[in-house]
Length: 475
Picture 1 (cartoon, rainbow, N blue to C red):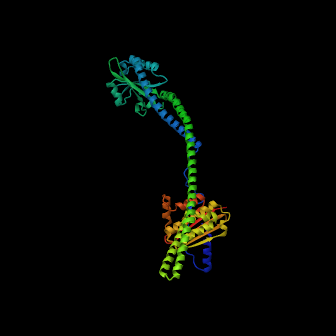
Picture 2: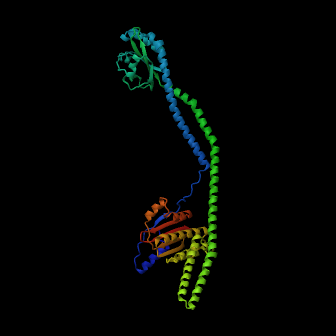
Picture 3: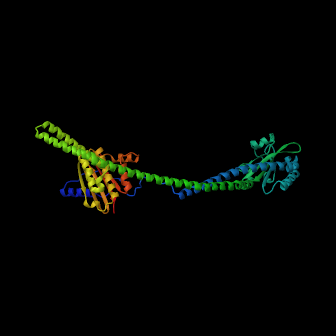
């Protein structure tokens, strides 16, 4: 950060005198140029809300599509498994059981050939890809895949239970099992098995494998059945909600505009009331106190001439007390409403602020450049005055300073206000943290500068006083 004019002059004088400059705390940026103002967020625009609604409808549609697809797949798989079980039961009773002979178990070629003709003519087809017939010991006595015939594989618990409890079972086949080696590469398969009996009464396990394509086809049909109704209902709901949402947004905008107008009126009313109170005090109480001061002073002189020294002393003390009260009252008037800001300008208003501290035995030096007020509009003048007022108010309350300097200069389209005191100072890191946490701290000063689009810098440390610098663009 570049040096201010006051710092440059101080450094130049120190160099001319040959004395070292006092090391001062570094500057900390409280408000940077372009920082956004912390106003109440405006309600979203109608287009944005409608876009959000459409986006939400699209996301819900995707969610419905995914969940519907999963539900349709599960339902289709369940129904396909049931259908496959029914079809296998019919084939077992109508085709396999009549062609089954005792010779098939013993390996008789004629029995095997009879069963193979029945299976290939009536069981195998576009949907059924494999048939196996097992003994209870796990030996394959027939299959349309010759390489499986005669092999022994351990049966699972569910397959063995079919021999004791004759039912038809169906499930998605586990193609990783050893007995399903030759079914791999054909995609997912549905496996259905049930018991059949030889003419001598020996139970065998009849097993078929059907393609999973039927499940996919049925899931698509189910999904198409309710997807159109669901999505169209959702879109109809969005269309019906649009006028309602648009009306609510319009009401919110009107309510916000009304609230802003009420706030402006409240601020104007507050300003008018402060002006009225200040005028009433100035024209009433202050004038009456001034008159009382003159009367008491005159009575003191009269008592002095009559040789009543003790009475004269008391009257002079009372007159001094009244004059101090007048000074405090005028300071209060400046705090309530600065009449000189509108009538006499910024310089006179800053002088009045300084006079209010001088009544409290504080040495206040005011250095105002003549060009600082040139072409300065009333709004920026109020910003400068308010920030100076808040800084001096903090000095009076917290700094315990004995000397304060107020400097107002203008340089390259920027007005610089610098206020420095020799008070106790403070820890800027702690104060900044309190401001960020929502405590008062620097909030008022930061808000004033931020709302005006100004820069605000701070230089302070415990025991080293405090300096504030505001840079306000005016060109």
